[in-house]
Length: 227
Image (cartoon, rainbow, N blue to C red; front, side, top):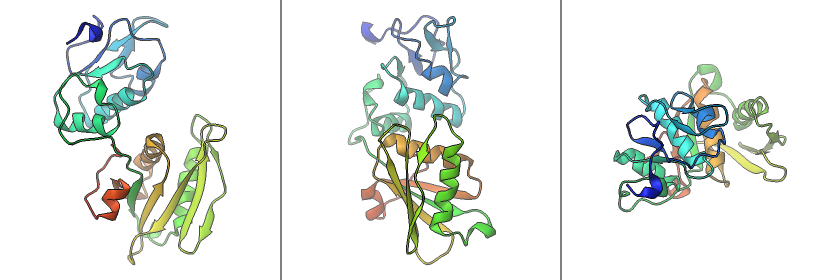
């Protein structure tokens, strides 16, 4: 490990660590993964107080790596799935181990979902997007949303968390079997992450599979996460 990435002395041993004298007290690690990260004192440096042990905790730790401001949180493990996910998210530089060959950053902006209850199988595409739009209105930061537009069997609306950066999301039925939809957008990884966060708690929808445009068009297998 290079001197540049010297770990903070309060890190517990393990794959995730915070670089010493790097933290700016941004609050991102303790907000996203409070079970993994702590701070020395109010406004002090953060460190890894406990390594993640469950898939959900690993997901949150990886989200910290992707969302942090200055690259202070790093991964020194060798798990191929984690190395692949961080590389696909454009965070390969945050890994100490060699990256998997042939893996590159990828935007998965297509997600297929299926109705999990009989009463939701008859939903139109607009009803699916309305659930997402209502979820956004109850989140922080305050999201701005447009009205849902309908066109034949498809529907769309846009949302933003900045003044002018609206992102359109479109829903279309998949095939002739009721209760399956494809949601897609032309935005960036954060847009996919916001949709993924909504789907985690959307009990009426499940069988979530994420695809890049190429993966979807070529009929390749999807995956449970955007990255």
